[in-house]
Length: 233
Image 1 (cartoon, rainbow, N blue to C red):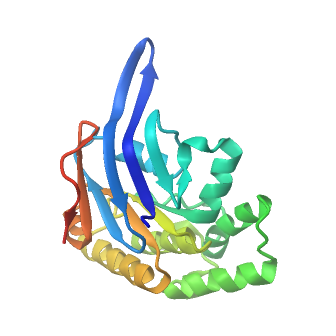
Image 2: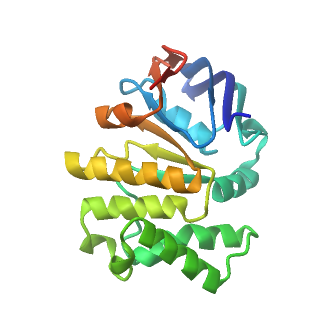
């Protein structure tokens, strides 16, 4: 069974009196434990698609199933709970909270999941956070704040934060855009290692040829439509 399935998926935004289609009836399927890239020019629909996959936005038509759950059926609270339990996010600008330490930034999703009813007691949270920081090579930086570490280190922390709740799916929006070539390559290698270790599926929105080269499957979006059925390495 596919982890993600889209069937005739559409998304239309209302701008004043005009309907603006962003995603135009696309179909695709993504298997578990895969490394997938959605590529295309700015305005092609990549970010819109990631927002729907992440339960941040609802489809206008068609179906989008993640872990056999139809995203369109989730109300705001259910979407937040589903997102907290099953989906991690990695952003191009890291999105770390500046007043929190590295440890606290990685711990934050576990605290949010706990508020929704999934229990992560303090001892279990600490064990899981330290495990993830060790996995990304940042355990010795746990007490530092984001402004005290490099861009590559920030992205390592962001990867740890995305994986700390053991999600089945991680969505990465241009995760190497603010990194130099060597650091970007090391982050990609880290993500592949985490995929192999934890069985996590990574879906990227990207312009980066490095990610395209590492992805097992690449979907090309242009003007809201898929231009291929998924090119496989």
